[in-house]
Image 1 (cartoon, rainbow, N blue to C red):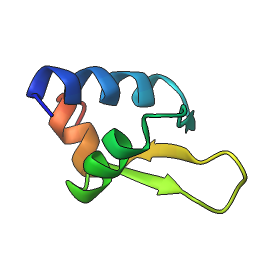
Image 2 (image 1 turned 60 degrees about the horizontal axis):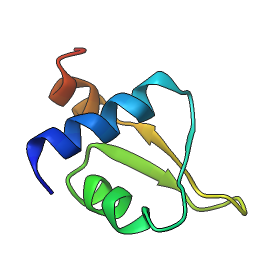
Image 3 (image 1 turned 180 degrees about the vertical axis):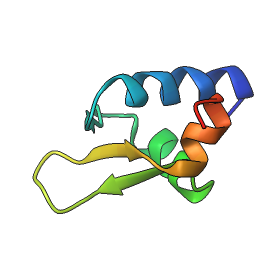
Image 4 (image 1 turned 90 degrees about the vertical axis):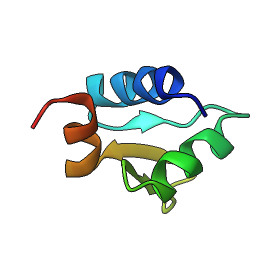
Length: 62
């Protein structure tokens, strides 16, 4: 995933307290999670993602 794609997804997640993971996007979100930028909540029927401190730092929102 390119830096611009990462930033775009992180900005979407950052604008919401809990960003629902849309069908077909699981792979992208899992990649962000493997980078430590987000945390995926897999405990609900609809998975959602939240920013981590590292994700906020990546966006420059220290």
